[in-house]
Length: 126
Image 1: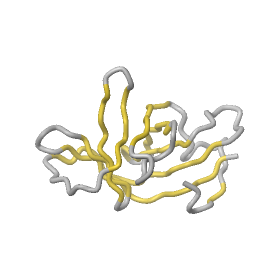
Image 2: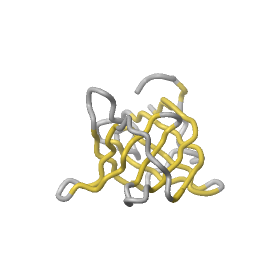
Image 3: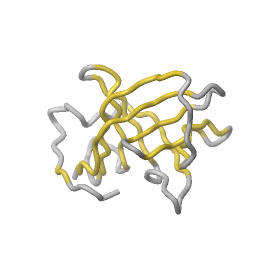
């Protein structure tokens, strides 16, 4: 089953110190690369000054369970162009105040706009 948990707008920008920051609506995460771990999203409450806007658009957050052609994970999809989406797997979900960081892994599994995948909308599941 595929469930759309959340959707909205995002911004991906870089600070003058080359830190990537991802904003999903009003929730802000630092996007860091940790040696030997990979890429992480880290919860942040600090105000970050934008030096360079890298991308902006819509996002969709899907919960996937027992779908034959998809990983059973939380899927984050970022719009990177008109009708173009980049998918990511969130192995432990989105970070929050209790769980400060979580792995983010790029994937070629795209749900948005794919005719095979149907989903239900259930807000607030994340």
